[in-house]
Length: 162
Image 1 (tube, rainbow, N blue to C red):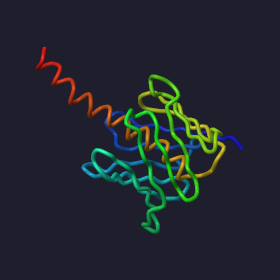
Image 2: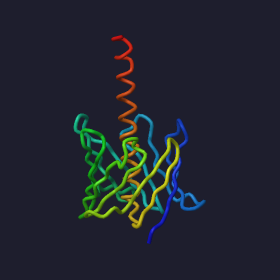
Image 3: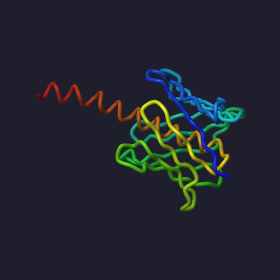
Image 4: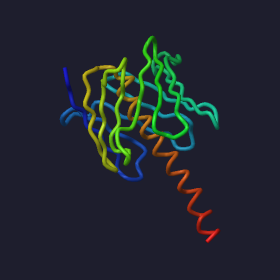
Protein backbone atom coordinates (compact mmCIF):
# COMPACT_ATOMS: atom_id res chain seq x y z
CA UNK A 1 0.00 0.00 0.00
CA UNK A 2 1.54 3.27 -1.13
CA UNK A 3 1.04 6.24 1.17
CA UNK A 4 2.23 9.81 1.24
CA UNK A 5 3.45 11.83 4.18
CA UNK A 6 4.42 15.50 4.24
CA UNK A 7 6.97 17.30 6.36
CA UNK A 8 7.98 20.87 7.00
CA UNK A 9 10.75 22.60 8.90
CA UNK A 10 10.61 26.40 8.98
CA UNK A 11 13.90 28.32 8.68
CA UNK A 12 15.73 28.58 12.03
CA UNK A 13 13.53 25.85 13.49
CA UNK A 14 14.97 22.73 15.07
CA UNK A 15 11.89 20.58 14.42
CA UNK A 16 10.62 18.69 11.40
CA UNK A 17 6.84 18.21 11.65
CA UNK A 18 5.46 15.17 9.81
CA UNK A 19 1.88 15.00 8.53
CA UNK A 20 -0.48 12.43 7.03
CA UNK A 21 -3.01 14.53 5.11
CA UNK A 22 -3.73 17.38 7.57
CA UNK A 23 -2.97 15.50 10.78
CA UNK A 24 0.39 15.81 12.52
CA UNK A 25 1.64 12.24 13.05
CA UNK A 26 5.22 12.84 14.11
CA UNK A 27 8.29 14.98 14.46
CA UNK A 28 12.07 14.94 14.41
CA UNK A 29 13.56 17.44 16.88
CA UNK A 30 17.15 18.46 17.51
CA UNK A 31 18.20 19.44 20.99
CA UNK A 32 20.53 22.45 20.91
CA UNK A 33 24.14 21.66 21.92
CA UNK A 34 23.40 17.95 22.05
CA UNK A 35 24.47 14.94 20.02
CA UNK A 36 20.91 13.60 20.23
CA UNK A 37 17.90 14.05 17.98
CA UNK A 38 14.48 12.91 19.15
CA UNK A 39 11.88 11.51 16.82
CA UNK A 40 8.35 10.25 17.13
CA UNK A 41 6.07 8.81 14.47
CA UNK A 42 2.68 7.22 15.04
CA UNK A 43 3.37 6.98 18.77
CA UNK A 44 6.75 5.24 18.44
CA UNK A 45 9.69 7.18 19.85
CA UNK A 46 13.33 7.02 18.83
CA UNK A 47 16.55 8.79 19.75
CA UNK A 48 19.35 9.27 17.21
CA UNK A 49 22.69 9.74 19.02
CA UNK A 50 25.95 10.51 17.21
CA UNK A 51 29.16 8.80 18.27
CA UNK A 52 32.73 9.36 17.15
CA UNK A 53 34.22 12.42 15.51
CA UNK A 54 36.09 11.63 12.29
CA UNK A 55 34.30 8.35 11.67
CA UNK A 56 30.86 9.23 12.91
CA UNK A 57 28.07 6.76 13.34
CA UNK A 58 24.63 7.23 14.77
CA UNK A 59 23.12 4.89 17.33
CA UNK A 60 19.36 4.42 17.02
CA UNK A 61 17.74 4.02 20.43
CA UNK A 62 14.20 2.87 21.19
CA UNK A 63 12.67 5.78 23.11
CA UNK A 64 10.53 3.59 25.36
CA UNK A 65 13.11 0.98 26.41
CA UNK A 66 16.27 3.12 25.98
CA UNK A 67 17.97 0.19 24.20
CA UNK A 68 20.12 0.50 21.08
CA UNK A 69 18.16 -1.07 18.22
CA UNK A 70 20.19 0.04 15.22
CA UNK A 71 23.04 2.04 13.77
CA UNK A 72 23.60 4.41 10.85
CA UNK A 73 26.98 4.64 9.12
CA UNK A 74 27.88 7.31 6.56
CA UNK A 75 30.13 7.46 3.52
CA UNK A 76 32.90 10.06 3.21
CA UNK A 77 31.30 11.94 0.31
CA UNK A 78 28.06 12.60 2.22
CA UNK A 79 25.91 10.96 -0.45
CA UNK A 80 25.10 7.54 1.01
CA UNK A 81 24.41 5.83 4.31
CA UNK A 82 23.64 2.36 5.65
CA UNK A 83 21.08 1.61 8.32
CA UNK A 84 21.39 -1.60 10.31
CA UNK A 85 18.32 -2.32 12.41
CA UNK A 86 17.39 -5.77 13.62
CA UNK A 87 17.96 -8.15 10.75
CA UNK A 88 17.60 -5.44 8.07
CA UNK A 89 20.27 -3.56 6.18
CA UNK A 90 18.79 -0.60 4.35
CA UNK A 91 20.74 1.64 2.00
CA UNK A 92 20.10 5.40 1.83
CA UNK A 93 21.24 7.51 -1.13
CA UNK A 94 20.66 10.80 -2.90
CA UNK A 95 19.02 10.59 -6.31
CA UNK A 96 20.05 13.94 -7.73
CA UNK A 97 22.94 16.39 -7.72
CA UNK A 98 21.02 19.05 -5.78
CA UNK A 99 20.28 16.65 -2.89
CA UNK A 100 16.55 17.34 -3.07
CA UNK A 101 15.60 13.72 -3.76
CA UNK A 102 16.71 10.62 -1.93
CA UNK A 103 15.55 7.08 -1.30
CA UNK A 104 15.91 4.04 0.86
CA UNK A 105 16.56 0.61 -0.62
CA UNK A 106 15.97 -2.79 0.96
CA UNK A 107 17.28 -5.78 -1.01
CA UNK A 108 17.35 -3.91 -4.34
CA UNK A 109 13.77 -2.57 -3.88
CA UNK A 110 13.07 1.10 -3.24
CA UNK A 111 10.82 1.19 -0.19
CA UNK A 112 10.76 4.92 0.58
CA UNK A 113 11.36 8.00 -1.59
CA UNK A 114 11.77 11.55 -0.34
CA UNK A 115 11.63 14.90 -2.10
CA UNK A 116 12.30 18.31 -0.61
CA UNK A 117 12.61 22.02 -1.05
CA UNK A 118 14.39 24.13 1.56
CA UNK A 119 11.61 23.97 4.16
CA UNK A 120 9.21 21.18 3.18
CA UNK A 121 8.95 17.87 1.46
CA UNK A 122 7.12 14.63 0.77
CA UNK A 123 7.67 11.02 1.69
CA UNK A 124 6.29 8.26 -0.55
CA UNK A 125 6.33 4.88 1.13
CA UNK A 126 5.05 1.34 0.90
CA UNK A 127 6.19 0.48 4.44
CA UNK A 128 4.83 1.35 7.86
CA UNK A 129 8.26 1.05 9.50
CA UNK A 130 8.44 4.23 11.61
CA UNK A 131 12.11 3.68 12.36
CA UNK A 132 13.06 3.68 8.68
CA UNK A 133 10.78 6.61 7.81
CA UNK A 134 12.36 8.78 10.53
CA UNK A 135 15.88 7.54 9.76
CA UNK A 136 15.61 8.75 6.16
CA UNK A 137 14.70 12.25 7.29
CA UNK A 138 17.35 12.17 10.03
CA UNK A 139 20.13 11.31 7.55
CA UNK A 140 19.10 14.17 5.26
CA UNK A 141 19.25 16.55 8.22
CA UNK A 142 22.62 15.14 9.31
CA UNK A 143 24.17 15.73 5.87
CA UNK A 144 22.61 19.20 5.58
CA UNK A 145 24.22 20.19 8.88
CA UNK A 146 27.64 18.87 7.83
CA UNK A 147 27.46 20.80 4.57
CA UNK A 148 26.56 23.97 6.50
CA UNK A 149 29.53 23.44 8.83
CA UNK A 150 31.89 22.94 5.89
CA UNK A 151 30.63 26.12 4.23
CA UNK A 152 31.01 28.05 7.51
CA UNK A 153 34.62 26.89 7.73
CA UNK A 154 35.55 27.33 4.07
CA UNK A 155 34.10 30.78 3.36
CA UNK A 156 36.26 32.63 5.93
CA UNK A 157 39.31 30.72 4.73
CA UNK A 158 38.63 31.68 1.13
CA UNK A 159 38.01 35.31 2.05
CA UNK A 160 41.22 35.65 4.10
CA UNK A 161 43.30 34.01 1.36
CA UNK A 162 42.03 36.32 -1.39
